[in-house]
Image 1: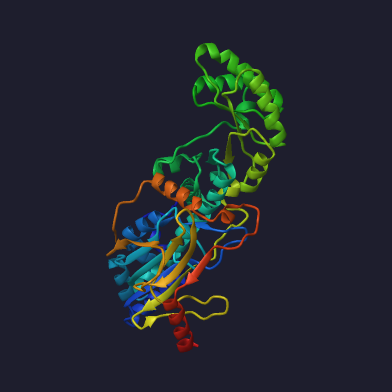
Image 2 (image 1 turned 60 degrees about the vertical axis):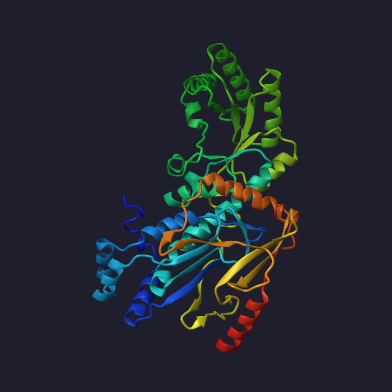
Length: 449
């Protein structure tokens, strides 16, 4: 089975990136160029984004190379000359990257990442950077909304089996953790990223025993202290009573049941009934875990209805961001040796020049952002883009994943209250253009128009 890996990932690019690069090479067009990666507009019902994917992007840039197998394949396409293929064999990414920190909130039109490098290098990495940063930003943003809906209750990423491919499942688990998920069912994500792993049992396990109670007791004996029983294989309330019976039998042997899981049906009504069964048996310590095609809207409604649910499992809707499955992320040339560059296509105008983003606040709450030219003076707020790569190497070690979670928690808490609402259409966060940027935009429009 073939996988994307460090040896072949340079080929994970669109063909036109290579044909453009070959043309640049042929004509000696490899001066320094700057590209911005940004999102044109927020998806419907999204009022903010959570930047994510940067560290994986930097790892890619540090190891970027075309090996003999890659250039042999490109030669077989009969599109590229030997001199260009030889150039690719020796090429490494040597540029610099400025980016928003992972976990920071972001908005449409703001550079999430800025690449300055020889034109060919900057061009060839476009496809991967867009794939990596836009996907993880998409999932982290969805996860942050689920976190808001849970109102302090933990939830687990259960999306791996529904995500769009193996790599997507791995990256989705990482992004979901940054966005607030407490754990993941994806064991590989636990091994690669150090994310806490969690899980319950499947209906097939319960069905494999002659009696439901036997399944419960056996599982609890095998995994004492880590037992969540799935009680809706047959009848949920009856399953709750059998869980109580299993807990009673195990009490003298040191076994323990931490939670019961509801995965179908009327979760509000069933949670109330199951809680009553558990409490009547003196099992107030046993929590109720709910899953089953949940998202931020259903979780919000479940809790608003007074359901005594203590934790959630969120799968399909999280790992695919089902209500908004793509971001309008783009990677555009903004400056080269001729100066600031602009695109004037209808509905797709870009902001020229090398830019910084500043965030202003009133102390407790962020109030607005300003996109400004680098070096422009008198701009209110703190700069959001920091240099994370120089000469093709990171400027600092990768931060712990928990630091990114903490940053996201702080950033979301500083949003204006209206932006933390899940259901309502709200007044967007204000993103301003600085006087210098407006003047440059007008000049570029006049020059190119």
